[in-house]
Amino acid sequence: MNARINRKIRRGRGRFMGMDVLILHTEGRRSGLPRQTPLAWFADGEDTRLVVASGGGSMDPAWYVNLMAHPDKAAIEMPGQEAVPVTPHRLDDADREQAWQRITATQPRYAKYQAKSDRQYPVIRLTPR
Image 1 (cartoon, rainbow, N blue to C red):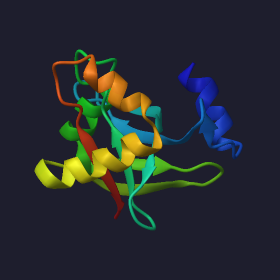
Image 2: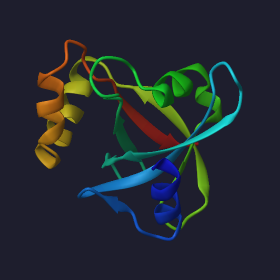
Image 3: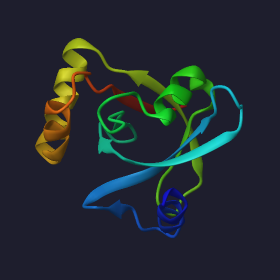
Image 4: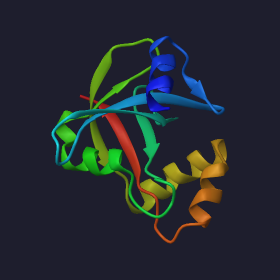
């Protein structure tokens, strides 16, 4: 399914299930292989994006673990554009709370997902390098 969504993003279609999507490029934590994951994103300024590591609720998703293991290898690909290197920053405390409020106001489904999990979903800011 990821490959199909990635093809659509590359053709310039940047919405899936009512959300804006991008392709996150990471390097596998153990394998060192390139990984490309379609993710919903939320605006955080002109060129900065927020992504949520929900991972189905119970555990951190593989893309998040890879991103945190190799933050210097991260890039994002917006619909119909080339990949741009980014610097990831996990938000904490008040920064996370403010971002979370904006995310859940835009997509209330995230608040529903979070309510079903014991773990707090990480929110990551992706800033162009």
